[in-house]
Each structure stands twice: as structure tokens, then as C-alpha cells.
Image (cartoon, rainbow, N blue to C red; front, side, top):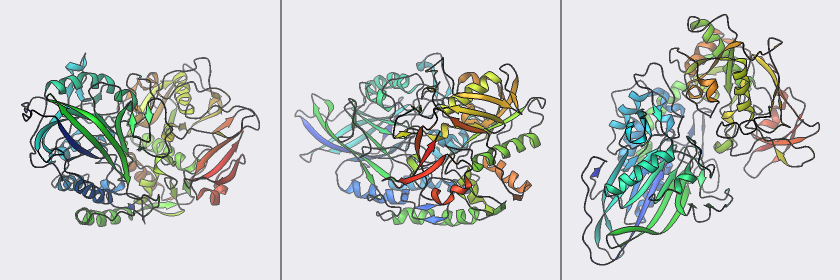
Length: 640
């Protein structure tokens, strides 16, 4: 049963609702249902490959929601962010400001109680986000999404309500009804909000732990009986570092938080892939002893937190709990075994048809296959296509925005390299007609182009940060991996116009938070531009995107200080213009970077199951095929 019998909700300025007077102790079971990182993936359809059977989709999660509600007397439904942007389908609705956003429409029908925005919900700018969220019948909350960062946290100006208190009538184990005040607050990963020069406001964020330490006492003072944190942040390091992106473990240690919804990293928790630590109990679904659920991405899972609440002397405590991530495809197959909710499917049908027409529109001709199969082990045509398009656009349209006397460099990464998206999550564009579908496969995010000016010393630091995603290669050790599976591959940037070697025998100069970990070591060797060594004091113009410009991926702050203001042009639009300018494009491959280390050292890495059949596309004889792992990835070996 969905708790809509009393739907009033109050925020921090609202009235405090009194508890029902009851002399005896009370036991209540409350189920918290949660989604996260839906990214507009409503149907089990991959618009980037034009294929059915995506193994996920919000329409299927909706069926799990309705089923999970029927199993209990008391439940609430929340979303943990990144719901409005991400899948290709949102490209066709961005200009439609007259009708309700389809995700909001679906969520209203399902009866969501609260949500928090994720970093990608800001991808189209603040006005777009506010227009969509104001259409919702449920509130959005965020403690650390700020218009103005104050000198102290209590001086911040938040965009949304920092918290709400849901007044809910709940039924106890004896069948009696009581009022339960459920506090809901939300958090964004710091430094992850894209910045747009065209915005009247620049969105800022504060550290998650600082924000939580401020807001939890205020929620208690406002009458919250229990507190659920919607944290658009991943399960990462145990040690808190200011402005850390994935802060779930230190967040769970904060007194007063009773349950946490995690997200952002597209993780599934609890689950069989986790290794227990003193603070992580994957079997019971707890972190720091508190119930946590991370329900995957794209509607792959529904988070279910069952809380056993006990009230004594007018104080509620969580006496017991159970955490689960229910999969729409429990057998790990590409076709969901959970049937789609018919109401959701009907709501999205017209937009789905419109999107199919949009993705089929031709934009040019491609003479070479573009893949990200080997983008972490060798130079990639797909990445270099992005880099060449960026450089062409800046030279053609932004010549008055930078010093044309300075060398112009183009930095980019491969966005689809497996990871939490699974073994099918790779760019693969066949030779032939290029369509708008190919754009989403090559560049799935809605970043805008950005320019930075920096000297050679800062360029070197930029590349050192990029190279820190790789493990240190130790001679004589078997079964070493090129990169740890929990390190996002999109952190690895390359700069096309520079030639350099990455020495994996050296420890990484930067840690996962972009802080210098090994000041005496450097992996980047023989860094040259146009055949000449890159001088530390010489100035360069670097093309990147607004995500990196805003600090995304913890790239060194010294590299991000000199922003050159340019119009906010979406990268997908730049790619369209580039392919239209070169309609018969045959992308070259520049072998401008390479690995080195102790000779004969072997490192394994994962790739697409299709990769073995296309090894001819890789001009690196040091890559050799191995077998297939249990997750369906094809394994390869890089020999240094």
C-alpha cells in the first residue's frame, strides 16, 4: 500500500507535526522503495545500437514498484537523481517546454514521494531542471546544490528545499495507526555540475559530509522521527576527503541518518560482487551498520529497504532492517524477465516512435569502424574523432575567443568502456552511413565545449592525472590488471596533438581524489608537441568540456584556473557540424601515446565480446587475446 492517506509534506520552514499520543510501545514496518540513475531509460531499448533487449528500463522497474508496494502496509517511494538526462531519448524533448516532462509524468503516476537531483539533471541548465521539477507533484530536495556558496554552510543559498518532512499515517503490527514524520534530504557529488557561460547563475556545491553535519540536527529539531538520505554519490573510500565525489561510507558514519540511498556510480548494493570489510556488510546490506541500497542504473534494479521501527517514550528507532536490490533481469540476461508496466509503456510510446525517427537521420559517411574496444590500452579512432571535431570547431568558430598564436590542443576520453554498464557498453560504429544514433554511441553525454589556457607544466599534470587511472605494473608478478574495475575509465583523457609515453613501472602521481600521492614520481615521459619537447613555461590552449572545466574527475585545480569564455555549444552539435563539413570522413589513427614499463610485464584488461573479431583495427601487436570472464567480457593481455 502506498502511503497517500496523508500526503502533506513540510519543508524546513513548515509546521512540525506532533506524534500521535500512545502510551504503549509501538512496532511499525516501513518499506523505502528507491530508484536511481534512470537517465531517461524508460524502455528496454538501446537507442545507440537500435536493439531491443537492453536488460533494464524504468517501465520494468515500475512493475517491481507496484509489486513491492502490495507486499507491505507502509511504504514510500523516492528517486536518487540523474532521472531527466542521459539516454538518447531526451534529445527530442529538450525544446518542448509546454508539456510535462515524460519522466515527471510517469513518476507522478507511480506516486513518488520525494526525489533529489543528480549531477546530470543539470546538463541542460538550471532553467530546464527547474521547469521539470516544478511540474512534479512530489518535492525535490538537495542540501548542497547551491546558487551561492556562503562563507559557512549556514550561509549557503540552496536551489531546492534542503530537506522535507513527510507526515505519514502508518499501521503498526497490531493494526493501529500512527503518525510518522519521515525526514528526507539529498546530496550531490561536489564538483560534478556542468557550468554554462550562458547561465545567469553558476551552480556550486558543498562537501557532502559538511552539508550532512549541518542539516541532520536541523531535521531532528524540525520533528523528523527517522531520516533517509538520498545521496547521489557512490560507495568509495572509507576516509573522508573534502569534496570527495563518492562519500557514502563516511556519510553512513554520521549520527542521525537512519538509511541511505546511494547512486551516481551505477553500483548495485547489496550484491555478490562486493567484498566485505570492517564497515561494509554486503550480505546484510549495511555500511557502518546502517541500511544502504544502491539500485544500479537505467532501471536495472529497484532498491528495497525494509525498516523495523520501534517507538518507545515517543522516540522512534530503527530496530532492524533488510536491504535488497531487486533486478528486472534476475538471471543477468539482456531481456528483462519482469514485464513492463503497461501504463508507463503507453505514456512513452509516442516519444519512443519520435526518437526512432530522430536517431535514423543521416549526418554523413564514415569510412572506418569506430570503437572503444581498446581505448584504454591503445590510441583510439573513436576518441580521436571527438578530438579532431573539437579542434576543427574551435578553429572555425571560436578564433576570436583564444590566442591563435598559441598551440591548440584537444583533450577527450572514451565514454563507453564497459564498467558498470556491462560488456555491451562499448562504442561500436560501423563503416557506412553515419546517423544521429551514432552520435549518442560516440558521445552519450550532453557536455558543452570549453577552453582552458595553461602552460606546459600544467599540461603535464593534466596527463599525470589521466594516467593515474592505471595500476602500477610490477615486474615478475602474474595476474596483474591494467586498471582496477572500480576506477571509472572516463577519467582517462588523452591529448591528440601531444606525443608521450606512460611509464607504468612508476606509481601513480595522483590518487583517486586528484590529490598528489607520490610527489617524486612521474609517469608521463618524452612529452613533445610538433616534435619538440613541451616547455614548462610555454602557454597552450586546451580544448575540453564543461564537466572537466567544472572540476569533474578531480583534474588538478591548477589546470582549471584559466577559463576562456566561449558559447555553450553541445558536443553532439559540434560532431554533427563536423560530419556535415566532412561528409565522406575516413578517420585516421595517430599513435601518439603508448605504455612502457619493465619489459615482458603482462597486464590484463576487459573489453567487449566483439573485440576479438576486430583486433585488426588495433595497430598494437603487444595486445593478445585471452578468454572470456564470467561477466561476459572478453579478456586481453597487454605485454609491455
